[in-house]
Image (cartoon, rainbow, N blue to C red; front, side, top):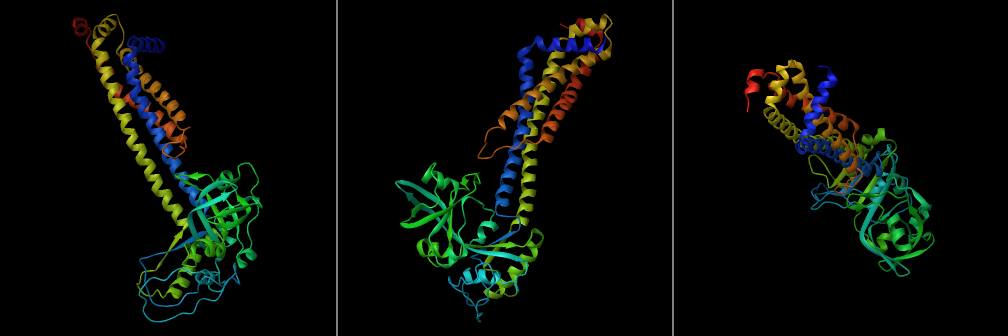
Length: 428
């Protein structure tokens, strides 16, 4: 019996019970599709997080207040003093004595961090205040801006927020506390539609701001719209919306990605000195290193993706067990046929090959259909995540499905091949 005849007999056996074959393939289809699609979701989630981190810049540090800290004393500067927005400045006067509560992050802290003598690795420092859910109106249109940011011009470069229409605001706007604003794409669409917003005046919580620019579209990140924001000069936002309290954060940009760690060490030394953090005392601020965060997130999401794939692979195992079950039933049903074929001279290898081909075809066709379903499913957003197909997962899942067909089909096939003709002919 040549291989072509073996395959022909195998396909005839499968088509004899179409519904049973289809249900068996369904188990493999679900397994392969689940593995590929869940790995794609994990990869998409990882890429989405990486993109969000990258938007802030790989060579940036984010300093935010911490309520857990508390060290020695000292007086920090207040909200004024804009003489050197991008350059350095003298540190605030240090006090002495114990401190009963954590100090606030202030503009004076930011100016101290911009001192090129104390922090030679730092390129720019941007103090930031944030007012959330500020209602903006323009000629009857209204929109609640998720994030209204007050900062310095250096913030745009440090946070990787380019402008596509109009321009940024400048240092002179900060010094004069001018009420000018750069808005995100979502804000522009909701308030102005197709009209050009540059030069027009919007009213934010009762305060008029003139639009000078529109940010490049960044896209949404999960449940948060990255384009639903507005950025204005720090003192204008403090005067109108937030008051002159502590800063929400300070964004520090290192001169290069290679100097991020040096910049972080310099920032830590300066803030510890200004806030009186000595010995083992807890710092009253936190520093988020974007490069370190990116590495940590990559490792964590990689583990998450592997876990998703492993969970989905269990369904492949279940599909393989289904193949074994169905092939055993098939061998039992066709025992007499096997006996007749062996009695008229069919070799053991032909019988073995036929049932192995049947099991392999079931797993291969099921695997190919699973790949098709996964590719189609990856075109849709799942739980706020756009899946990213991983070619290696497709190849691996398909190869495993074929291997499962061979492995789980070998026992029924071997059992069929070992049947003695006389016993098979007597089987009822």
